[in-house]
Amino acid sequence: MRKPRMHTRVWWRFSTMRKERFKEVLRKHADVFDKDYLESILKRRSAARSITFKLFAAQIPIFAFLMLSLIPVEASVTVFGVSPKASKNLREVLIVASAFVGCGSAMLNHYLGILDEIVASFVDRRSKGDKDVSEFLGLGLGTNFWFLPGVAYGHASVGWGFLAFIGLIGLLGIMLVLCTLLVRLTFTGAF
Picture 1 (tube, helix red, strand yellow):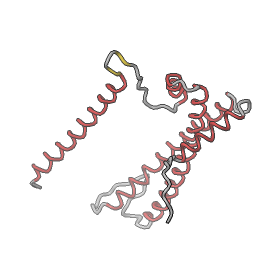
Picture 2 (cartoon, helix red, strand yellow):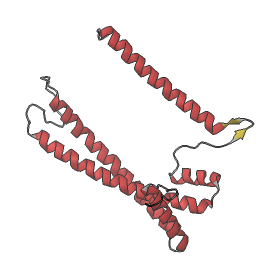
Picture 3 (cartoon, one colour):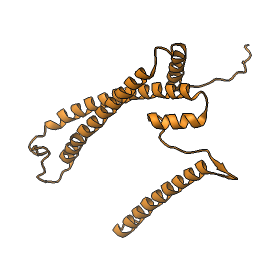
Picture 4 (cartoon, helix red, strand yellow):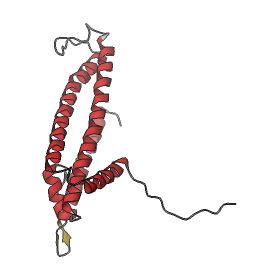
């Protein structure tokens, strides 16, 4: 009978593994991957984000037309000159178009994620382990979204206070939605 080995496993996400690989390549070939390379990555990322927004904008009318065609109300609504009643077979074509746009958007989001990981590797390499420098570089290059300083004044921490404030606002929003639903259901006689 085999005895079990006592060891720990480290589970990494693919993004973390790619980021570590990018850092390793950047460290080995620092002369090849210079500021010009970073600028080209940032331009590609900007262009990819622009295409992502355009795909999202193209998806909205397709979704709106599909929703209007599924509503059984006899309304004469036209989207770009086409009415849902007049073209019943257009639904299938729009579903296929929506699927293609969705697949393209998913591939583009994966590409954007890889570009973001490359930029984050540059930030990690340039900051040399300094957390404050990493935060400011990440803000400048667009890899950090929230700027939560870890500044402590006595026993208070500014970062945690800001997180608590955001959490409180979110909790109040959820309570507002639930109360609205409760009032709506009470007055419609659902209870």
